[in-house]
Image (cartoon, rainbow, N blue to C red; front, side, top):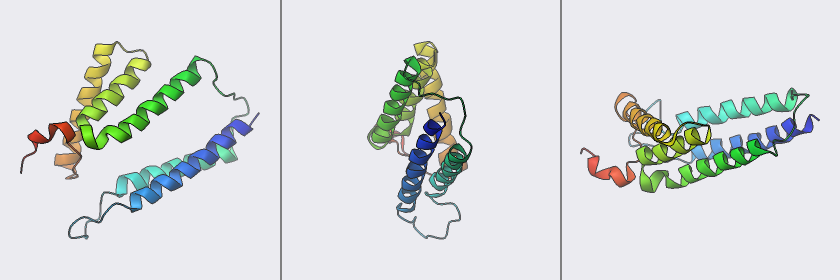
Length: 150
């Protein structure tokens, strides 16, 4: 049944449009003349998601089935983790939220808990440093705001 991929593709196109629209709602940075603003990366993700979704609609997998077993439960857990990640990003900050989200997802995929959360912590710190210092794009510090250098 090829309807599963097509239904999923339509849902993901709706998500891509909503995500892209949300990205355009970011306030313009001071000066407003930057080529790369806060909306650039989310818009890029929305375009990639939209194109991938169109592919699912046009060329669905002929042999697919909804994963109603353990895989389906793991997908629901991953979705809940990602929604919580988005909700906690501002109050907890990027590093702590990423540590928790990546750590939990790694653990659910079979990594030992300590290694999973160390991976999440390292990912959070490395990506934070790249965005703040290499790309000059600030990410929220949240609970770690005492580390902010003025």
